[in-house]
Length: 163
Image (cartoon, rainbow, N blue to C red):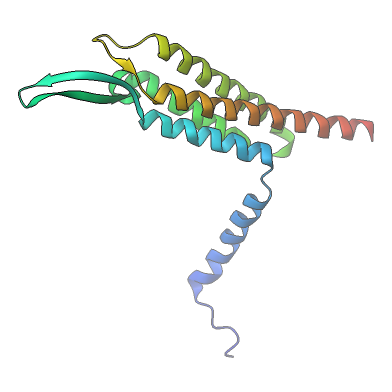
């Protein structure tokens, strides 16, 4: 009788913990690189992308402006592309090639947008800050992870065809 002392909430939580642990263990290096890249892009949207000299009644100082302050729509699009890129790594092995291509395209889009924002600054004499330099690093990791995942899927499918 004393052997079965589990509470009802423990029996429900144990299978879900096992599923999560199995999913994390099944992640391959390429997917981990891509996920880290996507998370880096998400963090980069909150960093300061531009610095501007602001004057107010209280005084003047340099103020950091995130992508959310300067280009709200672009911030949402970069956020959406990063999330789609990360979620594309969660596809089944049969869909891994398509997911890898989606992640690679998402990474390239983030890299391209970040480089453009280094040269197209908002009006008012703003200077480039750290955000446009961090975001392309995340985009590059997302691109590399996506290319590696699609290459793995191609190798797996060609191996099945030859068998």
